[in-house]
Amino acid sequence: MYRFLITILLINFSLACGEQAYHPMAKTSIQEIHLFFGIASAGQNSELGYPVGERHAILVFLRQPANTEPYWEQAKSYVEGEGWKKVDLQKASKVDPKTVDDNPDGKKAYEEAMSNGKAIIVYSDPVKEEE
Image 1: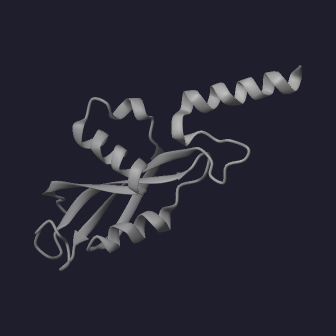
Image 2 (image 1 turned 60 degrees about the horizontal axis):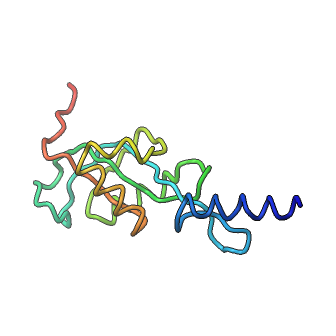
Image 3 (image 1 turned 90 degrees about the vertical axis):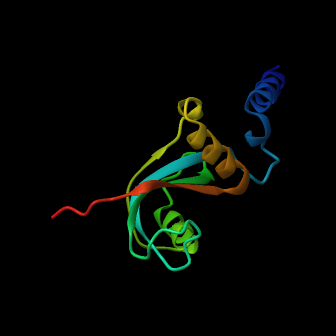
């Protein structure tokens, strides 16, 4: 009886969570998106065409296993790989998927991170350095 109930609960949980659900026989677990906020300097290889050295606020979306601490180094490496230098990630938090529904750019980045593992939003206005 209990084994039957546990099986039913696992099936319902899997159906409710879709492809991301944990199954005892699966090799992957539930995934979630962590959001990192920071500032970085445009490098020579930055695809966005900002002047080299110009500082911009960034949001990094990174897919991670559920219930893990933020992967700071992985997020920083991703930003550097996109052509940014002097990456200073300052805050990180888990993303509640419902919170991105009202923001088209955030929703697109969230979906890209769920599909491809990572995404970045770069704010177009340069950050003014404090004097």
